[in-house]
Length: 428
Ligand SMILES: O=C(O)C1=C[C@@H](OP(=O)(O)O)[C@@H](O)[C@H](O)C1
Ligand SMILES: C=C(OP(=O)(O)O)C(=O)O
Image 1 (tube, rainbow, N blue to C red):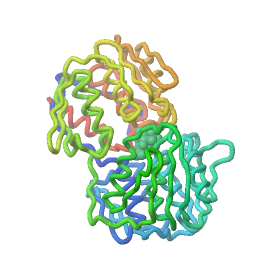
Image 2 (image 1 turned 90 degrees about the vertical axis):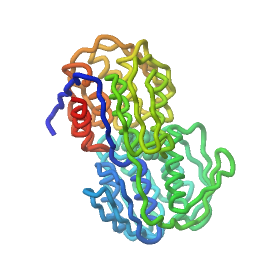
Image 3 (image 1 turned 30 degrees about the horizontal axis):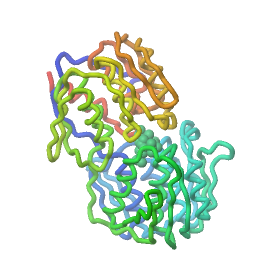
Image 4 (image 1 turned 30 degrees about the vertical axis):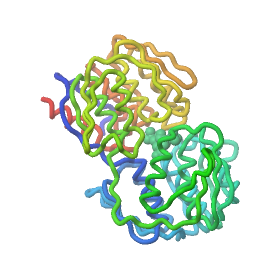
C-alpha cells in the first residue's frame, strides 16, 4: 500500500452491488466458542483480517488447532471441550479489542500462566473492569500496574464459577468475554451488571453465537445473568454473515453520491446491531429497500439529524462523513466510549473535519458537525481503519481528498479500497 490513497471523485451517482467480508464480531466470537466446544467445527464466511488473524494465531498458541483457509473464507477448529491445552503462552493481540478481552477470559479457564499484550495503542486501552471481575471469580489476573491496561498476566487454575459483577460503562466486550467463558466454569456463574452498558447490541451477538452452539443463559433479573456449567456443542458448519459496520461505508456512499447501492448477504434481521445504520440514513432522507438477502440504500437530498449513536458507535465516523452533505447540522451524541477505541475517535473526527475547513463542536461525549465548503486535505487516520474508510467517502464527491496510511484498513477490511473502486467502476 502507498503512503496515501488519493480518492477519485465519481462523475455520476454510484449504482452497484457489493458484498463486504464476514463480520469481525461474529468471527471472533465463533472462534472462541468453537475453541471451547467439544469436537470439530467448520466456520464459513470467516473474516480474514488482522483482528481475526491475531485471534487465530493466539488460539493456536493456546494449543487449539485452528486451520485457516483464507481463499475459501473458512476455518476448521478442533475444540478443546473446555480444557485449554497450553500451560503457558504469550499472546500478541496487536490492537484487537475483541481478541484481548475475549482471550483474557478464555485464559482464565486454563491451567497455567499466560501473558496477553498488544501494540502501543492497545497498552492505552482499558481492561481493568474485566480484570476486576475475573478477580472476583478467584482468578489470579492483573494488568500493568497503575495503568488499567495491557499487558495482562493470568495465572489460571481453572474457573470455579461464583458471583461477580461487571461495569460496562467503557466497553461491552468485558461482559461478552465473561459470558462466553462462563459455561466452561466448574460451577454456576452469576454476573451482575453495574450501571449502564455501552454498545448493548453486541451482547445480542454474543448470546446469538452461544445459542448456535447450544448454550443458553438465564437472565434472572434485568441486570443479573446466570450461566450453568455447559459444554458448547458444535453446530456442524456455522456460516458468518457479512460485516454490518463495513456495509455502512457502502450505504453511506449511496447517500453521499445520491445513487443506489445494494449490499448483499445482510437483511434487517442481521445479528449485528450496526445494521441499524440504515435507520439513521432513513431519518436523514434516504430510501431503504429491505429484501430477504440484501439491503439497498437510495440516496436522496439529506437533512442533518440529532442522533444517539451509543448502540452503533462503530458507524459514528461513517455518519460524520455523510453529515457533510446534509442540509443543516448533525449531532452525534452519547458516544464518549469511542475515545477508548483504535484512537480517540471523537478527537480524530473533529481534527480531520476541521482540516477540511468544517466547523465542529466537540463535547466529552458528542460531536456536532456544521456542513460547509469542504477543502482538499490529506486526512490523518491515526492507525484507525474506520477513519480511513469513512473519510474516503468524502473524496467520492470532493476532489483532492487523500487518505494517509490506507493500509490501516487491514484491521478489519484489507480489501476495502479494492471493493470501493470496484463499486465505483460498476457506475461508469
Ligand atoms: O463485541 C464486539 O464485537 C465489539 C463491541 C464494540 O466495542 P465496545 O463494546 O468496546 O464499544 C465495538 O466497538 C467493537 O468494534 C466490536
Ligand atoms: C472498536 C473496534 O474494534 P476493537 O474494539 O475490537 O479493537 C472497531 O472495530 O471499530
